[in-house]
Structures are given as C-alpha cells and as structure tokens.
Length: 367
Image (cartoon, rainbow, N blue to C red; front, side):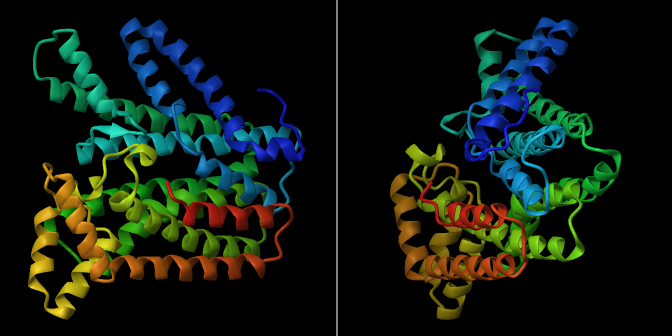
C-alpha cells in the first residue's frame, strides 16, 4: 500500500485515497476469483464496477476523522493501516446497497442498472435457461454477501495493532447487526403498515444513523484509543448527524432531482417506504381529519406504476400537511445538538473543524 501523506492536500482528498485502496484490494480479489473460474471473475468484475463506480465515501471519511480527533496519526504505518480499516466500511455499504436494491426491486442506482438487473440482463443476453429474474436475484444475494465477507477481510488485514483491533470490533460488530436489523424492520414496516413516527425513527436510527456516521466515527476513535469522554461526545454527535443525514435522504427520495440522485423521482413512494416524512404526513392528516389527503398517501405508497403526475400530487400533499417543514425542523434541531456535543468535546484539530464541516455537508445537501 502506498504511504499515506500527512499534509492537508492528502486529507482534502480522502475519498480519492479510499478509492485507491479499494481499487487495489478489489483487483487482488478479482484475480483470485478468476483463478477459480473465469465466470466467477466476470461476476466479481460487475461487483467491483459497482463499488468503484460512485459514492461519496462518507463512512470512511467519518472513520478517518474519528481517528484523527482522538489523536490518531496523519502519516506513517499506523495511518496507512487506519486508511485501509476505514475503506472496509465501503464494502459493508456495498452489501447494504446491493441487497437493499434487490429488496426494493429498484432498477437503477447511481444512474446505472442495479446489480440484480445487470445479471437479469446477462441471463437474457446469453439465452440462459430458467428464469432471468431469479438468476438476477441469486447473483445479487451472493455478491452482496461476498462484499460483506471482504469487508471483514479488509479490516482484519489492515495492519492495525491487536489491542486496537479488539476495541474496533465493538462498533464493527454492532454496526453490522444494527444495519441488518434496521433493514428487516424497514421490510416489516412495509407489510404491517406501522405508520407511526416512532417506528420510522427507529428504522432511521438502526438502518442509517448507526452505520453512516455514529459507528464509523466510533471505529476510528476506538482504533486511536479514545477516552471515554471523547467516545461519548462522538456517539452523540454521530447519532444526531446520522439521523439528520437520513432525514435529508428521505426528502431527496421524494423531492430530489433524478439527474443528481441517480434514482427515479419518487422512488421511495413506489417502494412504499414508511419514512419519517411519510409518518409525519400521516399523523398530520389524522390530526386534521383530512381523509382525502390520507387516501392519496395510501394510494401512492407502494404503487410500482406511480406516474410523475401522481408523484407531483404526493409532493403537494406532503408539503400542505406540514410534513416537509416538520422534517426540516428535525434536521435543524439534530444538527444543532450535534454541533453542541462536538464543540464541548475538546477534540483534536483539525479534526473537530472537519467534522463540523462534514456535518453541514451531509445534512444540507441538494443531492
């Protein structure tokens, strides 16, 4: 692995360095797989293309600054090991996205066909026997599992010291359990029609906040040997910013520009996601006894054939019921409490300032 530089230029392009680490690791794994069978190598090439083809590298970036905030070195062998450990988070993200797209039957991700759709098309193009949909589903499950296995491999071969590894495994293990538990509750919520804000917030905490910000921050901090006080502050900051990040994502899932988000407008509505945004709207409709708006929300949720016109109608209802304003208010409040936790923690610079900048970047985004 190339030596990590300790200057501001390096830390200004953390995503680029994560990309480099991932590319090196994934090429080695593809070569190993190709030795097993060329078909396996070709399948893994699709997975590698997915990993390297997009993403903001948010999770490794938070992990890195958690490390630096608690005294982690900016250069040298320890920093090199930390960069690889942080990069492993992208493979957990890959597993989550591949499986999430399969569960939601999504057609696109980052403006390209999802993994299960790619293999479904491969089945058709190759004139294979059997069902193309089933083949695509099976390939996505297996490749998502492989990404998760490789994430563990990257962490354990990163070169961080044994004592630091033992500390790192606490947030690492918790993160994996939490994100999968949140995914299950998300699936369950779409069939048992739990429309309460409390249920939506729990899913938000487990499925998004934990593995997007809180646990990556803790991972870096634990590897650095953080004090209990620093860990407490980072947990509070990470939880609040993680929830705010997902609330922004929920707004973009309905109001975002497809050219920017890489997914069709209103996809969250088609998939029937019971987000906090939807829960706030449903609660407001019940409180106002507005059956017409409630009926419209129930009609659009989970409708795979939802038209642009119906998406526009749903947007109007969500705005008129005050749900958009309520979610924006939550984002503002969570960001404020996170900043308070950060500023009173006495964390090392430049990490404290960078974390404050990241908090704004992930909660006040237009894409």
